[in-house]
Image (tube, rainbow, N blue to C red; front, side):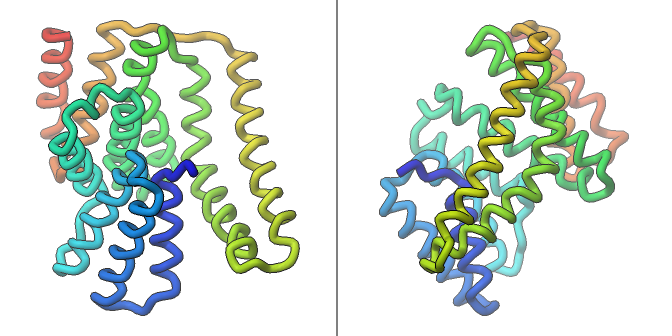
Length: 247
């Protein structure tokens, strides 16, 4: 059984939907999350999501809601403390960079659709150097796919969750309904593959690409931390120059 953060999120969302408000609800969701992860064998992706949700729930329990960016950061730090070698896992680095970039751009994305598209593009630029370094190159069409994917999947994921409920409760035609969701996700996978074939242009790992990605990531992190737009460029530029110096 492959358990990811998405499955943990579905469990938390379902529990939050059926339970009443209050601290008992927060405690119940916490117990459900970690019981589920224990039964699944504590998969890395699930643990990361579990810690992020737990930090968020702890903030609610204490009356001090946590920002998503802080929750992801704390989850990453805890995982590195428990197992420093996790940093060498490319899957862990990519997922953390992507999650932090998305969370950092949440404030911009709330303003308009242009902000949402900007956040999607930021994920591609931030993760591109890591992907290119590991696999030799990264398709440029991935930038277009990312821009379309995040807004699109904000609609697809709730639909998948909703149409998965009949199977969960054992209702008639649940298999057919679940198959429709599977076909929808497979169609996106096929479309993405065709776009890569039609636009084979790729970029390789270079120092300017790494510096630009560092600038975007650090600027987003500063914005998520509450820095004003006027105070962001200089520290972000210095950070990207340090990447060039020590890369």
